[in-house]
Image 1 (cartoon, helix red, strand yellow):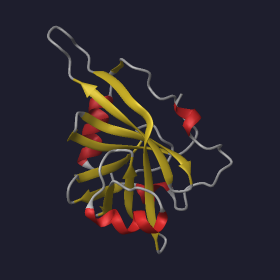
Image 2 (cartoon, one colour):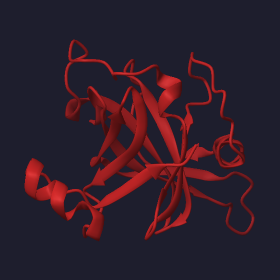
Image 3 (cartoon, helix red, strand yellow):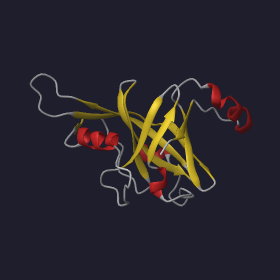
Amino acid sequence: MFAAVLASPSESAPSLPLDAYLGLYHDEGYANATVCSLPLHSFDDPFLAPECAALYARLSGALPITTVPPPSARPSFLISRPGFFSYSHMLITQDVGNAFKGSYGFVFEPTAGGKKRTLGYDGVGDVDIKFIVEHEKVSGMEWSGVWGPGVIVADREKVEGRRVEVAFAKVE
């Protein structure tokens, strides 16, 4: 169960307002990732990127074909990553502080004769995502649990004792 991998709600909240985490992030090897609010979330999304609008449109009316992670009262976002491996997005939910757990999401177009898109999730809570906050501003996000690390994360792994596989810088 998705909620079982998360810390208790009494753990620390994200260090910044939720809209500070939204926006475009970039990694040289993995290209762009856009952090979007959940379409029905209660906070404002001042950055409705075209990637978010396109993801919302694809998710709208899609029928679940796998166990969808249950809704959580904890802060959650979608990360739009169309065409990356075979998934279209990630659903991430806050764990502790600026650390989140992610699940890969897939939206499949209808097959011949079908009328509805289907939605599936895999690797529930398998990806660890840490937002980097410097000088009271989100400067990037780091992913672990994806696969092999990039060059720019080798020093952080040595210093912090954790393996970071992808390091995105926040662009906007």
